[in-house]
Amino acid sequence: MDQILDAGKRIYDLAARLFPLNRSLTGDGVRKTIEIIDDYITASRSAEDKKDISNHFRIHEIPSGTSVFDWTVPKEWRIKEAYIEDEHGCRIIDMKKSNLHVLGYSIPVDRWVSLEELKKYVYTQPDQPDAVPYVTSYYKERFGFCMSARQLSTLGDGRYHMYIDSDLFDGNLTYADLVIPGTLAKEILITSYTCHPSMANNECSGPALLAELVRYVSSIKQRKYTYRFLLNPETIGSITYLYHNLKHLKKNLDAGIVLSCVGDDRDFSIVHSRYGNTLADKSLSLILKYCPHFTSYSFLERGSDERQYNAPGIDLPVVTFCRSKFGTYPEYHTSADNMDLVSPSGFQGSYDVMTKWIDSMEANEKYKMQVLCEPQLGKRGLYPTVSQKNSYDAIRAMTNFIAYADGRNDLFDICGIIDEPTENILPVIEKLKQSGLVSVQDSV
Image 1 (spheres, rainbow, N blue to C red):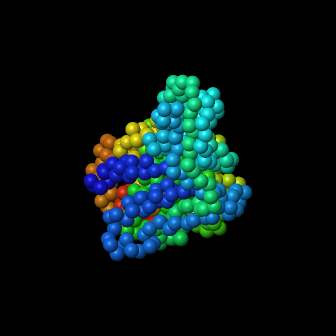
Image 2: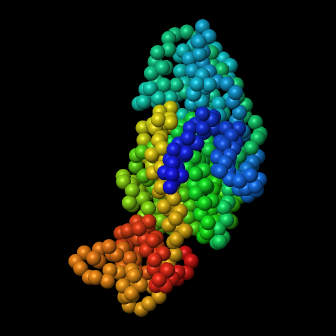
Image 3: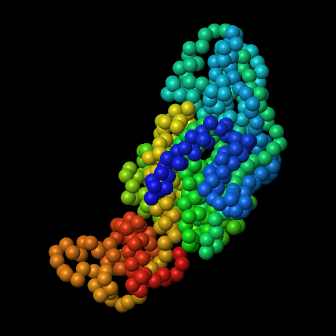
């Protein structure tokens, strides 16, 4: 029990380890992130299990220049140093203090400029004057810096030294997957992205929660589903993964969830698939229905990798799960998205949602009663033998489930009809199974 209650704290601590790393679409920051997560999920395993390569993330390196659908894998970016200093050698900003201070994918520069010219290369967020914005330029070569609007306004006339020691070269894009087999070839995909630098909710939260969910799924002794966990840079990473795995996913994927911005204490959110009619939509919506402050977003408000999985011709059953949805909270894509924004309780809430969803997916079948007409529950010890006002209330969930267990409705259909959370119905199903009153019509 303590292990479950401590999940939020463990996820928070893992996110804190990931936070300082300078990630981008490519590079060693991505590789180090995957390494830390892989070490985390194997830490509690036996020495023998740690040696088994199937228990580790598989690392895939895709060369720069590789064509993936309509895209091309970009060059790898490596950066050693970036700063602006004044005429006295005082560093105004330094990426050693915050890796948000440099424009992502900046090319090298070593130039002295006036204040007026400097401002051409500095990005700020004027509506949030104390925040440093997160800015990138992946597909057009340029250089730049980021600072708060307030700091820029304090700079006096003079000359300033812009310095970036970086390199764009033919390297690799890195992604990693881990497959945990079940009794079925049918799969569940859980994925998050590893391409943003030091932002807690919009970057570190998803991979950290994913790592804990790997542990949770591994602890399920009799798994029905095969689980595919995936870490990749957003957009180009999922496109690359789909390019290499689309045939397999179209054949086997039953439902998938992208984890994004899952560490704060605000709303729970779902971003639906393109038509909002997949098993992923139905199942996660039902779990979230019983959470406080649940917000549902249509695919028109998309923004993460649900875009790629739902693209025309791809058409995979994938939704995105968030707390505060990306782009909707003020700290998004700024230095204010730090470890103070996320919390153990926020992570615990997301963990609880996802583990309820996993448990429900494992139990999801079309159930059918095995007796004609209403069953006599009393002789099976499932109904009070003394009838009194309100005695029916205690077993209403069971009798309502029985009413719709006709072989046509799956678990989520029934729970939606009778307005019960799945965690209330799972023990009901077990009791009915043990009594021989219900069976699985066919596998969902």
